[in-house]
Length: 206
Image (cartoon, rainbow, N blue to C red):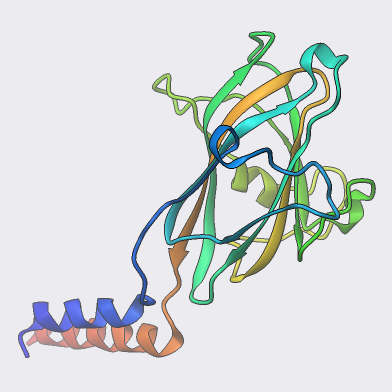
């Protein structure tokens, strides 16, 4: 078999089956996300690639009812959560210096009074990518945490069930957050890719 075709086959074997489609939850279209840590909105299994969540949370002027957004999601076997990226942000006050709270926990609920039970938690807010575009790597902030006590984790989150919570106490925030899932090569596929690499190296040395 020609080597380019071999690499194509091995790459295909390394990827789980599935069609890349973006799961999207828009509070305007899909309804308000739950504010109850014991009964989060169930959004189901994240699709491969991008999964966008957009809505409004917080407290208007810091005096109105507190609106937290909490949702539960599943990462399918063969995938990992490799990004939680903020792509849209606006505050009712016009401020770009708010520091909102976020947390993530294993399982179908999240404790909203005891941060030590969180997988991680951190403060987040408006930021840019250096070119004037709204962008903040929220997964990196959680990976560097927890800021207020918690279990902690390193690197992408593996397949499993998680609950995510965002909240702002002094302003009303409109956001657009992208949860990115990426395929994780199975051990057998990784071995095949490694073997192919060694074969190519030996071939070039001849």
